[in-house]
Structure formats: structure tokens, C-alpha cells
Length: 197
Image (cartoon, rainbow, N blue to C red; front, side, top):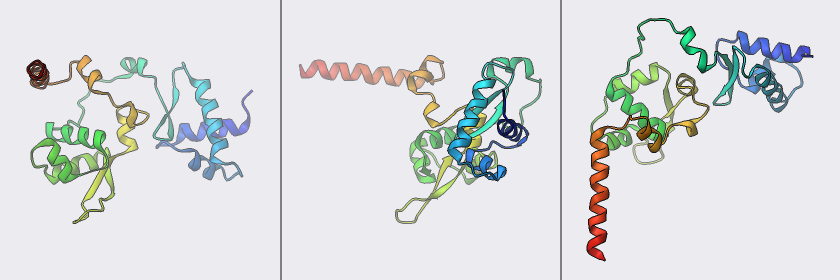
């Protein structure tokens, strides 16, 4: 049987328009419960909903209800997605995700071209990246990191869930030029190894 406290936490998570962490839930309850105790109850709720038409998921330490990914095709509506990223914005987002925290100069060094402030503004407006302080070097440049909204939008629990190079290759997402260069470099290494022997 579900007790009143578990029901109250479930209702709070369901009704919230933003994901909540255990500390926020404990604060809203006003009880003398620790975030650890709240987290245990939330995990019980998540287990109870596993495999159902809605699931309770954690993204970056925050919990929210969503429909399971395998039912998405039933719930998708035909509409234009207003958030289309330019190639530059997609590159910058990937660099921030894989190298965070990263400064604008570091992004430009990786991309090999200058990055406009507008590109960073678009990503911050989408709430996918945010300032993460300043690097302790001369000039103290601003550094950027991804946000919980980024994790939520892309269905990730943490940055550790980002695909690796092998995953990207298997999905056919690597540029053929990159693959050809990689193969050529591998052949060059074999030739050098043969000359040294």
C-alpha cells in the first residue's frame, strides 16, 4: 500500500513544471526528512512506474515524469520544430558537451575558426549551455558548460552517456572525410613501422 508521504511526493513531481531534486522536494514538504530519505522514496516511486505508460526519470540529479521513449512515435505530432541549430551552433554545442568547462578561445581552437557571440547566445537562449565561471588565467575568460535542460532534451542522465567515437562511427554519423583521413593516417603509421623494422 502507498503511504500518504509517497503519494504527496509523487503528486509534487507530477505537477511540477520543472524537474525537482530531493533537496527541493524536502524543502516543499517542510518535514524533518533528509534529502537522502526523500531520494529513497523517489526511487521507490520510479520503480513502481517502471514499464508503465509514464516513467519517473532522473536527469542531472533532478527527477521528472515523462513518457517512455518506446511510445514516442504514438505521441509525436507533425509540427515544425522552431529550434533548428546551424552547423556552427551544433559544433559549438558538441565541443562544450565533450570538453566542458571550456572558454570561447578553446572552442575556436578546436573548431579552427572564429565563433561569433551570437552562436553562444543561441545556445544559452535554448538553455543548453550556461556560464560556469571564469578560468583562472590572464584575462580570466568566461567558461561554459552544458545544463540540465541539455541533458533532458537529449535524453541523457549525465555527460557520461554522451556517445563515444565508436558509437558515432557505428551510427554512420562521422564525416566520410574524417574517416578517410583516419584511414590514411593509419596506413602512414604502418609504412613508418615497416621502415623502422
